[in-house]
Amino acid sequence: MYVKVKVVPSSRKEKIFWIKEREAVIEIKEKPLRGEVNRRVTEIISSIFPQKRVKLVKGQKSKSKIFKIDE
Image (cartoon, rainbow, N blue to C red):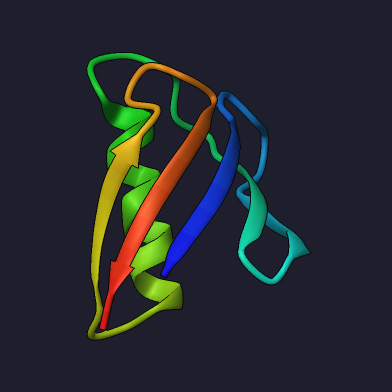
């Protein structure tokens, strides 16, 4: 399964908005430096899908990202 995520870095609070079943907007506090955003978004998605492997497939340096969730 793939999840499409739009990331909003440097927000005051962390929030998740589900637009569709597999599409979300995630606001996070981290600034876009040295991969901090990617690590935090991966942690958030991993907490939503526990005991599943989460991998960033596309968008390492973009606000729009695609994550693969393995069963």
